[in-house]
Image 1 (tube, each protein chain N blue to C red):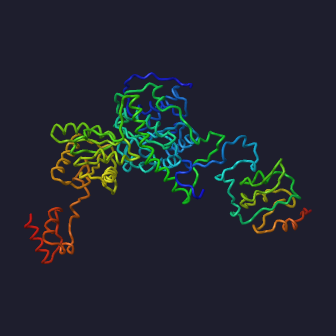
Image 2 (cartoon, each protein chain N blue to C red):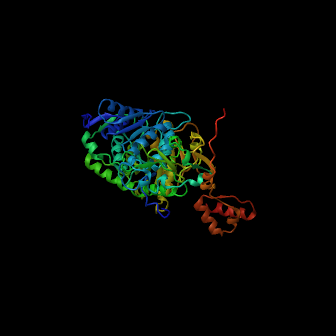
Image 3 (cartoon, rainbow over the protein chains, first blue to last red):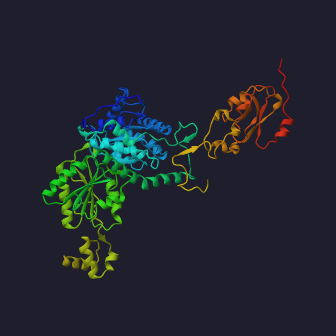
Length: 457
Length: 131
C-alpha cells in the first residue's frame, strides 16, 4: 500500500491520546469521521496528521456534530471499511442515538471514549458519567487505566469486534486528562507486528459488494424487533468474552503484556478490597500495598471489560473477601451506583458472606487521593471487625460540607406492633439482638417488651 | 419466515434485495430479476390505493411523461412504449394523469372498484378547442 511506515522506539513517551492515535495509524483505519471535543480531540487530530503526512491510506471526514460523526462511521462501516473515531462527554451524549444504530446493525466500529463529566455544570475533566451512559447501548466496553492500556486495548478492540462471530462495535475508555494528557513510557509494537495482530479487514455484508446488494438499517416492528435484540444480547452474553480472552492470550504472546477480564491485585488472601475502574485502579493498588504493611489484608479488583459484564469472573475474584467497597465515578442520581448494583447482582446467589458498601467519588475530575483510600480501607476493616457494615451503604468521598451518605440499613430495622405482640419473649430478645432493634409500640404489653429488651442488653 | 427463530436470520438490521449473486442487474428486466422475499418489489401495496389510474392505449403517444414522473416506478414501459401500470405498487397518486398531454388524456383516475373494460368503453372524446 502507498503509505510510509514509522520507526518507533521500544518505549516512547506518549500520553493516552497519542497512544490511541498511534494505534489507529498502525491499524490503518480506512475512515475516521470525527468532531473534536476535549479531552479526546488529539486522538482524531493525530489520525488526521498521520494521514496528511502519508502514514495512512484512509479518509478523514470532517462533520458538523458527533451525531454526524458516528453516522458517518456507520455508513463507512456498512460500506465495508475499517472505521474508528473518538469522543468525550457531551459529544458522546449526542452520539447516543447512533450508538444503538451501530450495535444493532452489527458494525465493528471502534470508538475511543476519553471519559469526561456530563454537564450541568459544564466540566471538561475526567469522570465516568459518559462511560456509564453507554453501558446499555450494545457496545463492547474496554477500560484502560493508563496510556499503555489505551494503546494496547485498541488492538484488542479491532481484533475482537471485527471477528465475524462477534461483529459488534467496541469502545476503548480512558480517563480524561488523568490518562489522556499524562505522558508515560509506552512499550510499542513495530508497525508490521501491530497490523499483523489484527490483520486485513474482512468485510461482511458490505454495501460495496455489488454482486450481493444489501439494505442496511431496516425497520422492524413488534413482529421482528425482539428477535434482533435477542440475537444481539445472546452474542454479547456468549460469544464476546471467549473472543476477548483469546485476544488477550495472543496479545500476551506477541507483546509480553498480560490483560485480564477482571484484573486482580493481591486478592488471594484479601479480607478487604475495592472494586473500581480507570486510573483509580492504579492508585488503589499502591494504597493496598501500604495497607498490608499496616496489617490490613487489602486487595484491588479492577474491571477491564465493562460490557459484557464479567458476572461470574467478578464473583470468582471476590470469593472469600469479607468487605467490599465499590467505587463509582458517576453520580447514580437516585440509585446505589452501577458497580454496587452489578456486583450485588453477581454475588447474590453465591455463598458469599461479604459486606458490600458503595462509594461515589471523583465527580468532575475531583482527585481521589491516597488518604481517601487509606480511610476507605480502614473503614472496610472496621466493618470486618464489627461483622456488619458500620456506615450507611452509600457514601460520598471528597465532597465539601457535612458528611454525605445514604441508605441507612438500620433505619428500617423496626418491627410493627402486631408482629411484636405475636412473638414469644425469647423470639423478641433474639430479634432485638440480631437487628439492633427499635421498638415502635406504645401500649402496656409493649412497655413490658421494652423492659425485656432493656434487660437483655 | 413467520416461524424463523432469533438465531436463524443473518445478523444486523440488514436485508438482501436478491436471492444469491446478481450480474448485470441494470440490463435485466424487473420481471427477470431474482428479487428476494425481503425486497419491497415482492410486496404488494395495492391496498394503499383508493383511486386507480386506467390506461387507454388509443390516445397514447408514448411521450414517456408518466414513466418519468411516476414516483413509484409503476409505469411499465418497454422499448419506449407505454404498456401498462404495475398495480401491485401504484398508490393512486394521480401524477401520471396530471402530466399526460394527450387530448383526451390516455390515463384517467377512477374509484378502485371501477370496471376497466366498462370505463374504456365510455372513454371521453376529444375536446375541441374553443375558438
